[in-house]
Length: 288
Image (cartoon, rainbow, N blue to C red; front, side, top):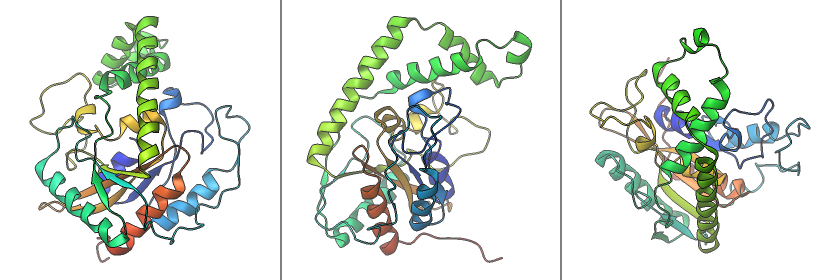
């Protein structure tokens, strides 16, 4: 969620391209969980950036074959006739009431875009444990070999994650891989029925910098996962997903709408985001 989280909290557009669409070198410590994409003021600017970011780099052995896609093509074609699902909580997430109301209102705008939105959860259980094993193992791989003097410089929470990651064994990791495969299969089947999935981008409005959990949260050793329940499943599935501003809380904090499509269909995510942006502009830049 390292694109969609800051995009949603700051009221800008951000798209996580399909894994491999944007070549990366050196490889992230989080391996195939890590995705790259732009954060911009407008959807059109993000499409232009993707044209450049997706240029080939032979050093990334996981990169998709370069196809010379122009992500601005068809951007204004609209989404009339597409099959769209809306899941308010993925069947398991706890969502702030104000965020839930703002997102639900934003979803009603899709009727103006020529689509009928069906309320449907994708049908998978919370993959928090699956993601945790992958991410904690990646953190251990990145930092466990550091001398203690260097580990002491890590933030306490990250140091704890590294220590816990070192306790994982190969069977833990294989079980997480099997769970990830099942999740991906479920989502591929879901997108046989639907072209797009709409959800909140995040479960809460923005909170103070330097905190890993909102005030009043129940202490949890996964820190950020309970308030990011909509982002990490699609890191696991590697499917393209964006966050687009869809409203503001009473305190003036931006709220994001997440749009997800099947693997390799960034074009649908961008088209839907551009269509929504056109009828629900949310730009609140101050006068300078």
